[in-house]
Length: 245
Image 1 (cartoon, one colour):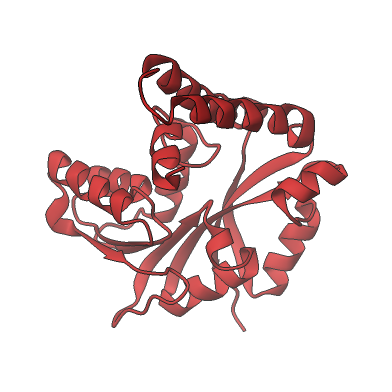
Image 2 (image 1 turned 90 degrees about the vertical axis):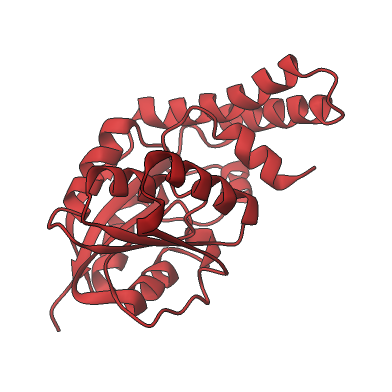
């Protein structure tokens, strides 16, 4: 199965590829990009949803995005052109963990992409390399709302509880200046969009050779969510600044 096809179909109708609704995305961006004229970088940008929203709302901002998915970047370029912000957006087809740039950025974003770096703290290390001295980082990652079962750990990997996650971020040299805990509504909506968009497409395209497999993927994911990690999974999005040494 084409992973890009699954990714594209499952994101249909949702504002970003993370459990955040429109208002949460708007508030987080306002806390991250609010001075005018910033240079913004998104590490693991996908279809650049965060950058496109930022550029549309802030005419003085310029942005760069990095991702390994060429089809996602192509869709981002097309949407940027349609929004009239294409001239202010540069997209790089590259590994975000290895990306280098000749200049620093006023804001570095990486929401829901910490897997590309090997976890939250390595993601913050990567962001630090690109961040201007007074810059801000917008980062989003999972945490355990309550002790997970073995199936949840097997499916999603190792995370910490919220307090331990925040302690680790602070010990790593960062001070949170804003944050958001995804609500139960946001968490559930994200899963319903993910599974529902796949299922609806499969039902609408029974002639497609991938239809049956996509319907099965949606059903499997829905079962894993409801039986495996729904009661323990949480999502935290932080706006961070460097802690003075």
